[in-house]
Amino acid sequence: MSHQSQLDKMCPRAGKLKLGTWLQSVRTWIVDMAARQAENKDLLDELYDDHATSKTALDEIEILVGELHDDHAAFKTSVDETKTLVDELHDDHATYKTAVDETKALADELHDDHATYKTAVDETKTLVDELHDDHATYKTAVDETKALVDELHDDHETFKSAMDSMKNALKNMCLSDVGTSIGTLKTNARSTSTATYLVDGEFKSKVSTDNLWALTGFNCTNGKYNKCFLCLDSTTSSQITSGTEADAPEDVALPSIPGDWGVVAMIQVHPTGTGDFTGGTTDLDDATVVPNATFTDLAFYLDGFGITPDTLSASKPSAGPETLSAGKPSAGPDTLSASKPSSGSGSLSSSKPTSLSSQTPDTLAS
Image 1 (cartoon, rainbow, N blue to C red):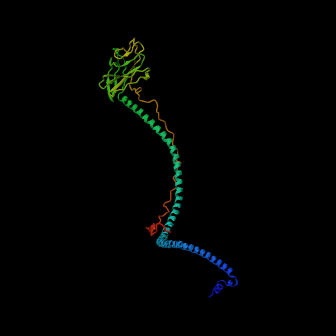
Image 2 (cartoon, rainbow, N blue to C red):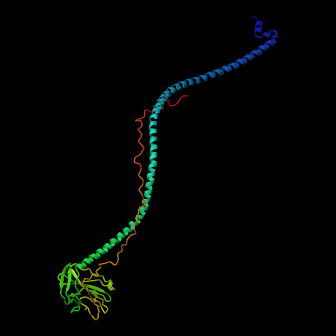
């Protein structure tokens, strides 16, 4: 093919153009084609780089898909076990649903029982309140009774002492007046009549005797008072026992009397002269000492022996209440209506699945 034919094929208009113009057009076309080839090369380079990047990404995706496939198998096993557990729990739920229903029925019955016993408890509380009030009332009566018992106890001791004194006096009583007076020996006292007396309940007798009682040991300070019992013992020998002097005759402390002496008479002295009275030394009618001696026969004499207390300390307590306010509460129900529910299943059928961590990779590579 000729150059002209080639030009016509490449550029149909070339034959109509002048050669210079054509050449300019060809040059422009060549330059344009070179630019496009350069652009195409840059695009191919970018596509090559993109291919390499995409290749790396595809490799990583392939690895990820492989790992996800393995993870799926592991989680598939766990899901299967979880489903088995859920099925067992469903069966257990049915079993315990029955037990829960029975428990609810029991709770309802216990609620009704509670209402019944609530009434009984309220009545019991009312009774307790009334008993509390009754207690306060009887506490007062008991306190008064205790005070009375304490006073009676004290009175008992007083009468015990009085009875002992009376018993002693009765067992050792003189049964006749003996007419005591100053003896021929003026420091002594004498009897002027026969003394009939008891010693520990046994009858004794002694004829009148001058200077029968020597008063040694019976003393009194000037201006004071003192008393002395003139006694006879079981052998009819004379005996004396002296009191404790005082400022007034009623304040003289009388002596205790031995159980084997009979009390015949009593002598009192009250020296108002000069000096003190000394028994066995001072004459009973001494003009200097002036003993002011007085004699008292004690036949059937009990006063002055501390036999009877002046008054009783005990007083009658106020009466307790006539009736108790408390009343017996009504009885509770004979039996409880609540019944024990049937027992639940002996054991759960469900079992814990194997640990997920044992079948799951620690981390995903993706």
